Image (cartoon, rainbow over all chains, first blue to last red; front, side, top):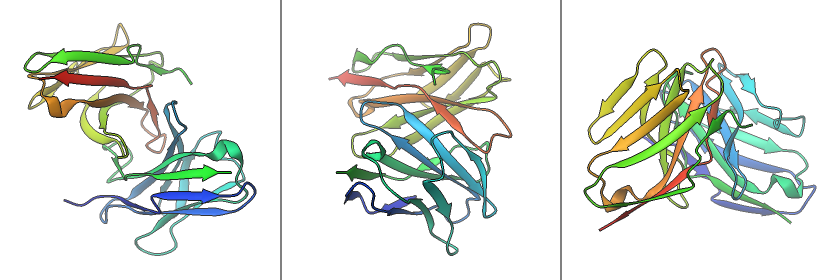
Length: 113
Length: 113
């Protein structure tokens, strides 16, 4: 069964450093997403991406964040200058269309020291 | 963002009995609702969805009920099995918002043998 994969599973970084989280969505899906879950809090939407453009983004997704689909398979989330409060689980998801169910990857745990 | 609420942080049920997980929402603009299950160290797994124009959707042991006038939905699991023990999230979306999902806080279900 096709699945969304994410690398790395755990990333530790120093405050102010740049990190890139990677995802391989399901191959025939057209919409890609990033969500995050801070420990003990809700899963929060960050951004959706379709046809090589951001489709929707939340207030959290400020200038420190960017997304890219550098090739036909990968989808990345970059945080330019990490802050302590960026520590969270980051989930990538994909769907066939924007109103279909989204399939989530296993997540990347980001720890900012 | 309190648009989707799951007021019960935990629920304990005997194996074979019915599990009922509840979710309330405040935004009458939501067009569709989904339930996800999440095990520790994994991403959310899609279970079942319902459009706002329906009041019931069934898939095997899982049934979702939607009461639009009360802005309430529930997930019924019959019969409950120990493998159903997980955190259950309800989520809601609006068409033409790029697939953005708003999640509830989650309810931890424990099914005891």
